[in-house]
Image (cartoon, rainbow, N blue to C red; front, top):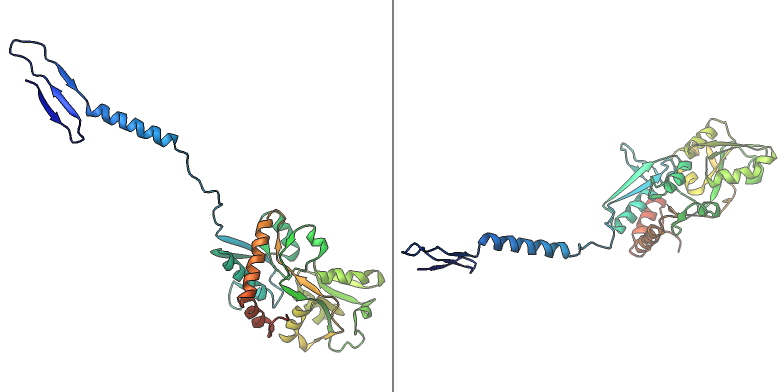
Length: 290
């Protein structure tokens, strides 16, 4: 007589026993193996037909790579007894990176005249090194909104009473940092018997003045003020009125306008929440003029 059993999943198996008279045995089985094969096939078909979900938003970048030329105190210079760089620019770019959500801000040391090429080649995300915003530089890169108002000035040796203004440098020797607006300003006198000596850093230009190899140094006013405050006043002094009024900006590649917009947003936030004012007062002794 036929026996009926049920599997755990509810499928039935039918068996017909061989009769006493030697009749044919009939067997009808709904094989569990076939059921499993069909189920697997349906599952595979379902997975294959489902579109793979991908995020349209790019993955968040974890590291901001920054270039600087760290011999421009109080904006960027080596921290004492450390491999890190410090200064107003350094504190500011770290605060900007944090505000933008970067987990890491890596600062690379480069020559000043190598920074813009490194931006355009994609080796740096941004550069900050007391860059004056100029029309000539705007042809090569993007700038953030201005973050510091500066200007050019000049220092001479303390015993020098002949030079009282820029015009008095005709026929003299001027030391400047290569690739800076100070170097460009000094070039205005080059056709009038003036010798312009260029150096890789502002520090080296000041050393040339100390060694009496130059009559004056033209550089950014806050840099020269910091230089005098930290030992330079032993042999040098500021003369005349500031030569120019300039704005500093952070340099970004023209290929990355979105980064430039986000940096401006971060700067706006730092100015609104008081972080910018705290950093400014830390390095310059007073809050910025409004």
